[in-house]
Structure formats: structure tokens, C-alpha cells
Image (cartoon, rainbow, N blue to C red; front, side, top):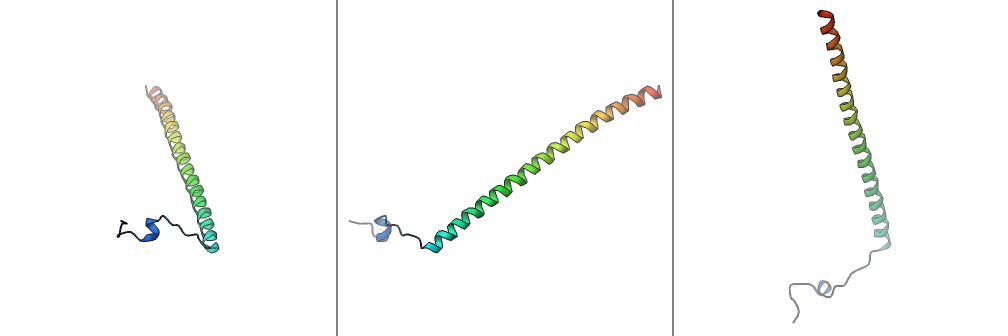
Length: 77
């Protein structure tokens, strides 16, 4: 006794082949997905490098501020 709720193609596990035009579209979709991944990786890398640059500038600013503060304290005394 078969399952009446499933169509016969699904029940028999039959698959259909794609026409040649769909193969070309699939190939272009894969290229588009790869291009998007590359673009996202580039944008992410630039973002990480930018954040590291900001942290380095902040640390250097603190070091310069400490040097200037010690010179000011010594000259004011």
C-alpha cells in the first residue's frame, strides 16, 4: 500500500535533468556567489586592519601624552 499523500515521482525518488540553459545559469550563479564571498572577505579584512590602525594610534597617543605630562610636571616644579 503506497502513501497517497506523496506524488508518484517523489515516492519513487525520480529526478529530472536540467536543460542546458539552466546549467549556464547555475554556473553564473556559482561565479556570482564566489565573487560575493571574495568581496566580503576583502571588506572584512579592510575593516580589521582599520580597527588595528585605530588601536595603534590610540596607544601611541597615550604614550605621547604620558611623555608630555612628565615634561610639563618637571618644568612646572
